[in-house]
Length: 259
Ligand SMILES: Nc1ncnc2c1ncn2[C@@H]1O[C@H](COP(=O)(O)OP(=O)(O)O)[C@@H](O)[C@H]1O
Ligand SMILES: [Mg+2]
Image (cartoon, rainbow, N blue to C red; front, side, top):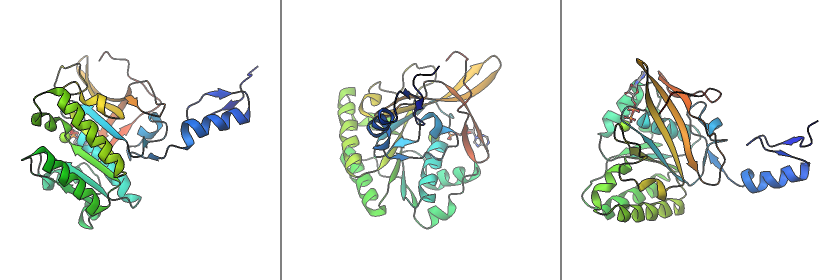
């Protein structure tokens, strides 16, 4: 006989009374507002989306889908009437928009009306870069932000701990501005680290990892949630596909290949 009949629909934990379940929900889930990612299946492994105003690292080697994920996230916001900014520190905005459209993301109308803005700031000085990010958030009233990539910021600092401190400062600033942010972390091929400098993951609220795994003579794409402050999440590595329309996650499947 099940002595804990009241199950939380968010995280699956069971409770012996309705009251205990209500307290759990209030303390663990209900207070947290979440931003749906716009990636089909992803919100299920995040147990509801990305907690609002958090800074989440989106880590992966090249070609794992980080940029695509970022645009899906902004597109989802735009559909909900939330402006979004894509800070591109490497690639030309026109090229990024063209590639996102080629993968089947219908962002053109939102780019045209300014709901999604792709900006490539000058990389001259770190403080002016941060300034430009802040100004663009104020100007557009952005609720969602993508920084592609945070790895570039490492080149401003000789000491990894300086980088860590500055990302922490940026996290505080973005929270004050009330934006939910995905910061792309470029992982080097073959590296076991979650980030280039090995410190970026400590200054953020969450880490999502995108994989490209060699398994026999094929490659498997996958995703996992490594950490997400103030939220429970799936502990599994889930397969994904990139196809016309972007990334799709399979929340009820898992990858067993070695990573
Ligand atoms: N229409 C498509 N169908 C399937 N896969 C695609 C399509 N367009 C791009 N891709 C795949 O998605 C990858 C692009 O992912 P991208 O988001 O640019 O990765 P990252 O930013 O991590 O380097 C490409 O390397 C390619 O393998
Ligand atoms: Mg990219």
